[in-house]
Length: 338
Image (cartoon, rainbow, N blue to C red):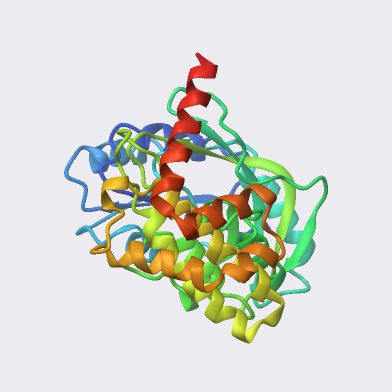
C-alpha cells in the first residue's frame, strides 16, 4: 500500500494565490494525499478561501494560528501531518500534477537502503513570473537520478549549483520532527540544509521538473522599486559565515565555503544602495574588510570566474567607484535591449 504523503502549505495573507496553489496540489495523480494548510495569522481571506476548498475536498485540513513566521508555520504543519512522508509547497507557487508520484516512485527505490528516513528525494524546479513567463533557471536538472551525500550536496549549494528549497522534496516526517526549521530567520531552507551536513545520509536528485516558483515583485529577492534593497543580501552574509565554520569540520568544503563567502559579499556590494556605503554602516565596512583580508583568495582561490575576480578586486580596493562603473555598464545593457 502506498504511504500517505502530507503536503504542508504555510499561508500568510495569500488570498490572491492560495486557491491556485491548493488546486495544483489537489490535481496530483498520486494518492493517498493529505493537504495541511497552516493559516499563519492572515489578516485577509486566506483562511476563508482555504476552508471553502476544504469543503469540497476532505483531504484538505486547515489549521489556524497566530502569526509565527514561515518556519514556525512549517513546523506546525509537520506536527499536524498524518503522513509518514511530508512535502512543502509555498502558498504562491504551483506544482505539476505528477510531482508527488514521481517523488514517491523514486523514494521506493532507496527507502529500503535508508529505512531511518535520512534521505530526501528532490525534483527539479522552474522559475516563472507573475504572468507565467519562464525565467532563467536557477538550478540544472540532472539527466538521470543522482545520489549525493549531504557533504557533496552542501558543496553544490556553496557553488550555487544546488537547490536548498524544501518545497521540491519528499521527506520523512519523523526526520523533520527531529530536525525542525530554525525560527526567526530568513533563508531558512539553506540554513537547515547546511546544518544537516553529516546528519542526513544524502539527497536523491531525479530527472524531472515538478515545482514552479512564482516570482513576484516585492518578494525577498526581487525588487518592487529600483532603489529597494532586498533583505536576503544581508541575511546570506550570516549563512556564509556559518558555512566557513562548517568547513572546519568538513575540510572538503573549505574552498567552496570561501568562494561562497566572497561571492555573497560581491552580491551585497553590487546591490546595496550607494547612499548606504558609508563608514557608519558596520555591515558594509565589515564586508569590505573581509574582501581585503582575503584578497589572496580573490586572486588565487579556485572556483571564481575571471569576471568574479575582476569585480571582487575592484570592490575590495574602491567599492564606491566599482559601483559607479557597474551602474554605468548596467545602464548601457538596458539601452541595448531597447
